[in-house]
Length: 229
Image 1 (tube, rainbow, N blue to C red):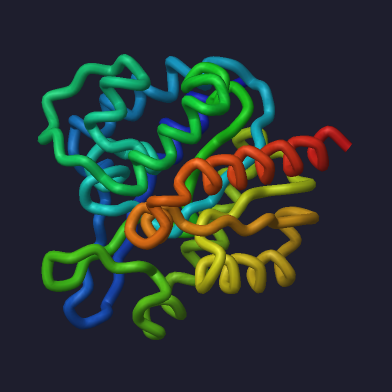
Image 2: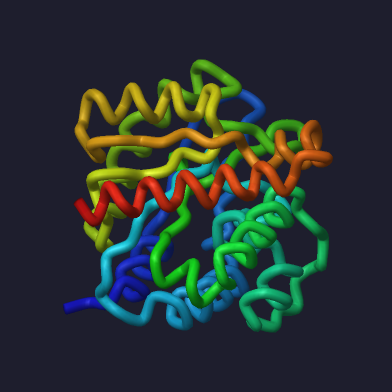
């Protein structure tokens, strides 16, 4: 039986996507040896078992986080400081990663968090346009063309070892709306709990940061309780 880590690493190696949307480029970190090696070290460290996890779904990788490390919401800085994985990547901070690791520390640290949770994204590959991050839902044509890819990759990830009663959706607006609609059609999970996106929190609600960390911890606890049944 493969470990959770082996399943994730194989999934990442096989990720590929061709799109034909004017001006849009696919952000696939796994085309680089650095992201493959770094992410493999991460998953072997935290997921070297066959235990099920509660899943969290972000939007899609960004240029300074998962787009370079291959690990959702994990920039090269937090990868070293919180996960103890040294890397030679540019140490550019990602706002979302800063929030996520503050929340992870509040929960008890990376060992504790990743033993119980798995973080991914509705689209496991990212997108750029004119050199800037792009969300999969920002362009209607892109969103429509990605639907088979998104459905397929969600199904494959569930086989890693997902608790399927409840999942968390990071991004309570368009991301949740789209993911929830897909879930109604395909029944990935019984419940999906939405949370505000870390980028929104860090840009517009930073003064209430501690309160948002508590909201995350509360939602994670509720989701875990549902998964325990």
